[in-house]
Length: 435
Picture 1 (spheres, helix red, strand yellow):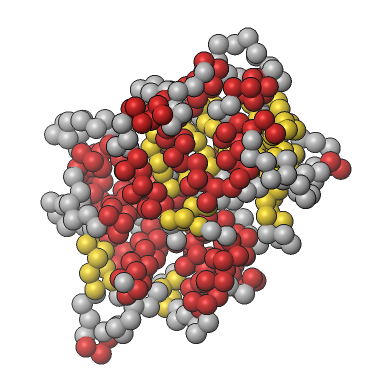
Picture 2 (picture 1 turned 90 degrees about the horizontal axis):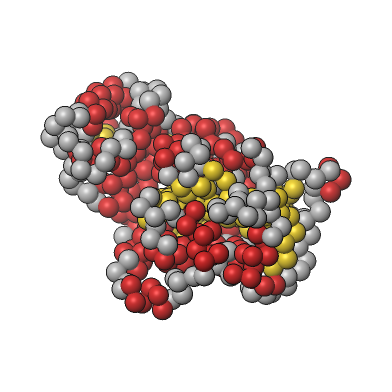
C-alpha cells in the first residue's frame, strides 16, 4: 500500500511540474484540461474519459451538448498532446516518467521512460522538485508527521466524497427528519445561497497550502495558487523555515481539508436539498475563475487556506491573521482605527467566526464565506444561520431590512466560552460590504 501511495505522489509531483511549465502553464484552458484528466486517472483510476464529460466539466458546455458540432475538446486535446511531447523532449527530458494522451482516448497514461540498462531508475521512486532529484533525509517522514500533528486533524477530501455518495441516497422523508425544513426567514436566506435550479459550489479549504504558508512565513496569492507558480519556488522559500523541498512538496500536494470545513458538509448538503438547490463540492485547488463567475458559492476557510476568498477581500473589512505563538488564526477588522485593529487577538474565552454574503464575480449569484478560529466556532456560525431568532437578530442590524432579499453583509460573531448554541453568539460586527 505504501509503495502504491508513493508512486501516486511521484506522479502528482510530475503533473504539477508539467502544469506550470511554459508548454502548458501559459494557457489556462490547456492547464485546466490537463489537470482534470490527470486527476481523474490518479484519484479515480479512470481508464476512459469521454469528450462530452470534458466539454461540460472543463469548458462549460451543457451536459448534452452536440460534440459533432462543437469540437472544442478535440482541438484542445490535440494541442495538449503536442505540448506534452514537447515538454518531455526538452524541459522534461530527464523525467523518469512520461505522460501521454493516447489518440482516441482522453485518459492520460503514465509510463516509465525507455532508458538503457545503465540509466534505469532505482526500484523505489524518487520525488523530483523543479526537475531536480531530491532524496529525503532519514528524518524526513518523522518531521512530516510532526508537522501535520501541529496543524491539527486533517480530513482527506476523497473520504468526504465517498460519504456524500451514501448521503445522497437518503430519502426525502429522512432528509425532512434531519431538520431540512426551515421557517420562511431562514429559507429566504439560504435560497440566495442555494438558488433553485442553479448550481452552488461548496469550495473546501486547502489545509496543505495553509500549513505551508504558516511554516515558511510566506504568502501564496490567488494568481500563484491558480497557476501553480508557487511550486517553482518550494526549494527557494523553504530553507528559511528549515523545510526541505521534498517535505514542502509533500505538504502542498496532499489533498486535505480542515476538520472545521468537512464538519459543515453534511448540513450544507441537507440545506441545499431543503431549498431545492444543487450543491457541488470542489477542492480549492481544482476550482476556477469560470466557476466563480458562473455559479453561486460557499467558500470555507480563510484567505490562506482558501485563496478564492481573495477576490472579495476589497469589499470586506474582516480578515484573518495567523498567531505563530499560539498556532491559531484570529480576526482583524481592517476598517477599524489602527489602534483597535488587533482587539480580537485575545481569545481566552471562546472564539470568533466571520460570515459574509456578497455577490459573485459576475453579480449573477451570491457567495457565502464562512471563516473561524476553530471548528466549533464555524459550526456555531452555520447553526446561527439556520436559527430563526439569531438570523432575525442579525437582519435587524443590517440596512435594507424591508427588502425581499436578504441584504449582502459581513458580520463577526464572538462565541462565548464553550457554548455552541447560536443564541449565545454575540454579534460584534454587522455591516454592509463595500460596493
